[in-house]
Length: 229
Image 1 (cartoon, helix red, strand yellow):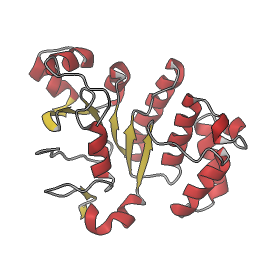
Image 2: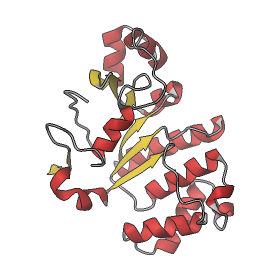
Image 3: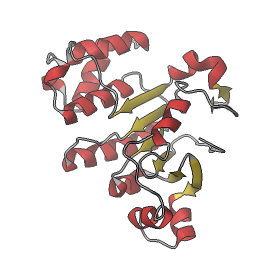
């Protein structure tokens, strides 16, 4: 990543888009403190992530299509582990709430190895919301979900941003769904920012009417990689 800089406010939903290998997942890992930037710093709530990572990450949620939960544990056991890590009060009630929200209540006692790809992603989302974070980082959150549930997740995220002031940063190849919820976009190509700004602002800048047109116009010369970086 080079010269990447952006800011987010309460209730913002930032969509990160770019071709495979552009650096989208890498950027999320930097924001989580898993990868340390070679220069500059990451700040949450006005505080440096490097110095206060533990305290800050208690207010940050993360879900990814590329991260698996322990297959030998049940759905409930997985959530209990994270509930204790995040020191969630009344965790039994909270676990039941997120399972209901993400339509996994009937899978509470099921082993994770028995879940479908879509159910595993929904469990990842349930885990990310377990401690009611102020900032949410999502890597391909709708991967493996059927169209109807994809729409429900998008509506839920937008509602959380509007009602709770939750700030969301997400990567997604589902451009039509992303366009419905994001109010800001970050376009990345080869580890560099191509553009950053409001949705309508970037539509006007590129002379397009929708996100799909914007993607193809902005990245028409981008070579496709085999995997997201």
